[in-house]
Length: 383
Image 1 (cartoon, helix red, strand yellow):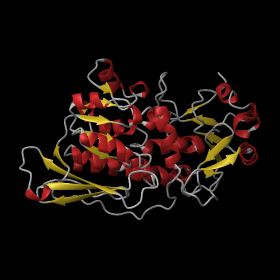
Image 2 (image 1 turned 135 degrees about the vertical axis):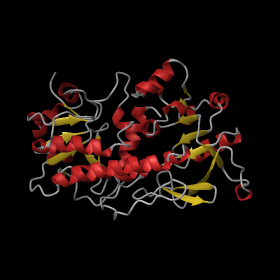
Image 3 (image 1 turned 135 degrees about the horizontal axis):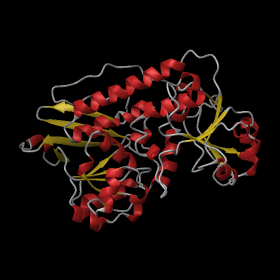
Image 4 (image 1 turned 180 degrees about the horizontal axis):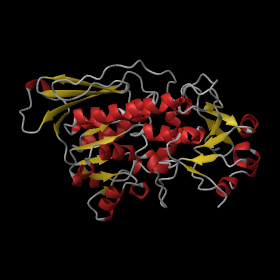
């Protein structure tokens, strides 16, 4: 999916997350090497004799009581009778198509980019290895949503198409692929309630490559890093106020007070301006109300595609009246972006919430930072 489109959808979905931290559970490694999810709620892994069963739960917005079962069997093994008429995948996978840039981030973390033969939105990629594959025609752009090139997908003969659903219309796309004999797996990481829950989908992808233990250890390291960073600011008395986003036409969509973005800001020691809002979902606010509440905000982050303050002023000259702009405390999450519109924040950021959190702490509490080098964020200036 093109990064510009996915970034907007992903941003809105990130606002649908719960603020309450889940109770920590001990990671469990079973005999098959797979790892049961600890914080992720959108999938389950069940180890059976000789195979694994992966269940994806409600993988699109407003989905209710929908689940999809996938059965993983090691290559060379005989398919057991109980898996007759089931959706079976022989692992490890060799040829995959990814319909979201976040899938690329997970496969990169697993060292499995060589298995990617197709994707959506190649113009918006940031990963050098995948971009090289596209340039050399080893990786094909198969289109996206209603513009999927089904003929090309059939010709590529993938082991699986990793897809996602914004709404129930994804069923029509899946049915079309199934009718063509193309196996599809739905991925719903963007609907998770916490940054660590999203990152834990690395275990889901790891199962398809028989890298369950590796994926589990990678996620444990991410969680440990995240918790260490969060603990540094947990007892800091002062919390700077934070504005987020950018208006779309005449409406400013604000993250709910119990959203994923609110979690990140709080964990980084900031005070989200709408943290008193009880919603998990984004809600529309008039520009006048935003200007009123945000006039004295200490920081402004995640401000669209703006590359500098002059570009930001082009949206609305009234931005110059905001304290965060006057004091040059505006930071955007597009440091790792490309001229074509790609942004690694939407590609690898979901796998590395610890790096995102580290950047936010450097912004809100620079006195705690070991260094001033950002990974995803950059400070906007007038040049």
